[in-house]
Length: 357
View (cartoon, one colour):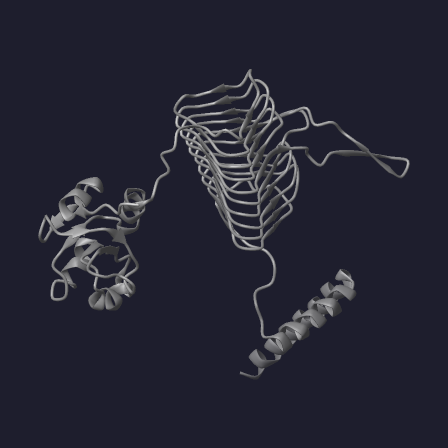
């Protein structure tokens, strides 16, 4: 595999930055400040990294103008931008090793009614069902299963061992990583006379454009209405999204989060790791839940919300739990009476003190 090189001039143009240094300086990869060599470009994302940047061997640094002034004695080649981290993100696509295969492998099993773009790639042992549609430049890795009636848009990436079922519809530029299941049966049962009676799931899953779904996720089809992920949603690994959930545009969901059925989450929200969201809730736009938050009620105002107990040293934590249990055992009315009594005594003492003056 040939490793391409890029000049400082070329890279500066790609991120719409300002060039300082030798325009023909070449690099062949991105690297961290610590690991960079003379063949690498790196970025400085704040003043706390200045010390590392000063001793870095990187041939080119992506910096703000303020940071560049402080590095002129140690480096010569810079790309000046307002947001070095964003510029780094753009350049990762330049140096990414892209797969360019086209066509259908001989071991793939494709129903005659399926419509497959001539520019798509279908890997070994992929199974594609009846009436499926696969768009231009979509790449489906080996052993994926695309069930009947599923539609996948343009420039999508479907990793190995992914299952897409339930007549799901995926937009353009959607990435789904290994072992994820989209459109599986929702967890719907009606209790009657001590038994659970299965509810057939008749809805589907609709996924917008530019959505990223990590590995080992499960996104259930709706019971009646569809489960929906709008444009720009990003989902980490090991996330459960239950039936009839709706996720608004550009919301980010971190690993091990579970969202129960029929909950609506707004746009531009952040759910940090291991959040649990109860069912039938409504979450406003621009809401952030910190890690391990348990969300049990609807949120109607933007902001940052937390739940749970912060980390203590083990002995301190045990004592805290004991006190919480003791507090829980005391009736609320008794606590209020104690507080009233304490307040009365304080007022009496204050009165006595003032009289003595």
